[in-house]
Length: 152
Image 1 (cartoon, rainbow, N blue to C red):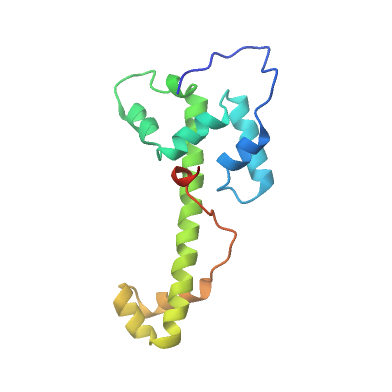
Image 2 (cartoon, helix red, strand yellow):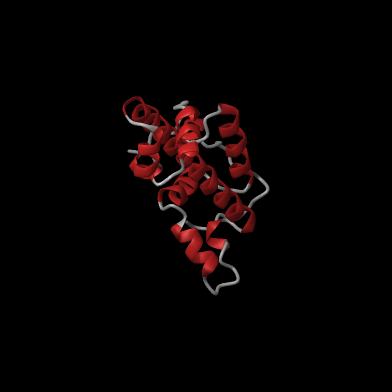
């Protein structure tokens, strides 16, 4: 990413909201996507910059933060932008974790139709009580449909 100098005049053309909707698709509520997009715009970031960080899983952001350069955040738009980007990575990770939990719950519920809770627990390496807890949680979309690195 290249640093975008801040200017007081603002941009003549706001970013396409459709781009933000796609980049922030892991946020299930439209209001959450709009609020996040507004924060990114205020920090001087556009959808392609946020998408680049999500697509690489934060690798470049992490490498910069872990490196010796005291101005590590500048290529990402500064410290505020870096903090927002890190928070968005966390939001994506939470969405993926939620999706994985739903899949696990659906699978465990079906396993319990054919096998005892003790057998399922032993095979999955969890307690019998946890088997019941996981199986009851359910598969409750909406979930993120595709990860950023699979988007066309």
